[in-house]
Length: 234
Image (cartoon, one colour):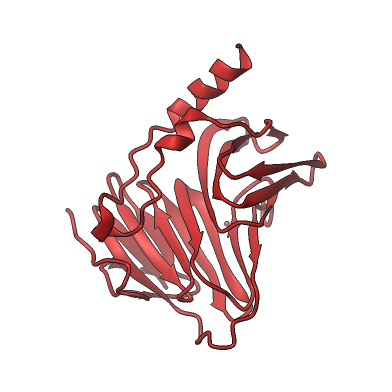
């Protein structure tokens, strides 16, 4: 089943608290209205789980704290949160909306991959939570994805399209800065690889505006591992 959405102008998870968090602390905007969210684009299988119910995610559907947005095979969804944060969920992704208020916007990625783009000023911070590490964002546009599972924790891939991201693992005290154009692999949630310019990151489709062309990202993340091996053994 497929559904087509409007353009972006139609605005709108034992490891209990172990998290990979991306923080973008932004200046206060006195004109910001009460935070809210909306589905602005959906194609393929996209659902919103809310208070025990499942809703079909159509453009214009309002979303808020406690909602979980899930895409299936060949599904893509674009959300706008607080009028300033734009998120694109690739296929087979599960994202919880943890908070959308004046203190900031927080989401939890429990499966799949996510493009994040802060398009304006927030009165707090924007954060993405997953298992394993902590990353502080200085820039405004980045991609994070779950990779292969190593023992208990899955790999996490991160790449930066704009700005820089400080990544650290509290359990091992490793810290590294990932800069614009670079990518990094957090192996099994415990080991940071050195930031590099991986060829696979250049294939990512960052577009979130259907009026400007295709928005679905079809990048094969298995290529990330091929690139990693190619560079390790050169």
